Image (cartoon, rainbow, N blue to C red; front, side, top):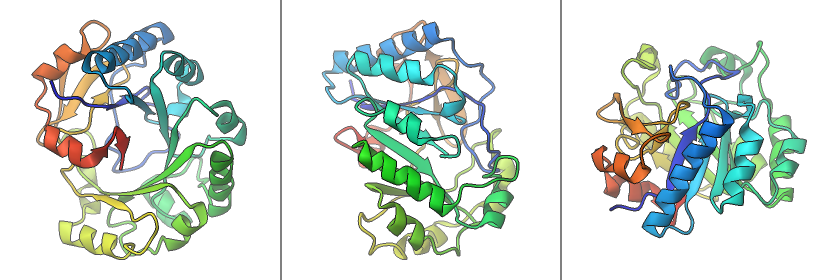
Length: 281
């Protein structure tokens, strides 16, 4: 059995943003807190079965801060010895929330694709036409560091931000990790965003501009998440990007995760190239 130490649990489909190329859109309803705990228990059992001592659940969305049981679920996962991380667009994140997560959340990831208001609005990275500015992002990043939580910044690269210089963002936030993701299409999910797609050569050129940053960004080209990104949808079903289309392989509410993974065409080499020691690079 391959040991997959990071599982992404997308707790909600709801989001206050409406990004045109979002790949994390689901038709499944959110789980109740009781069912969500069952899902977390299932993942934790898989970690124990595999002898994974640093197994981590990454709570994502949609926007996970819109899931009303998120704090309770973080508390529960922490109480049973599972590492926790959260990926957010940052708009609803507050210093008070970060303080509450101190000692429980190992990493907070914030997705930032642009510092330009017009670009963010064109992407849909806004809430009621309001965007997240650099000053607010810096304030959040400072609080995250004060609470001894790692900060990761994710940037999806598309036609919309391909020519933008984001150096000021990374220098100001001082993240522990930076990840560039080439925008990718999932059939039936975000394939209407074809016009935003960039070539692999364009993506490589974008990445090369930031090689001198510290830490040096990790670049994931289109297709890198195919068969390597463990995704549990809001209803607790395991799904995989298999050949550019989502396929579902079973429910963690009823079936041991280890059994579900036996049916899924995971690419362990690709997974291992994206993760080191159970932590996202």
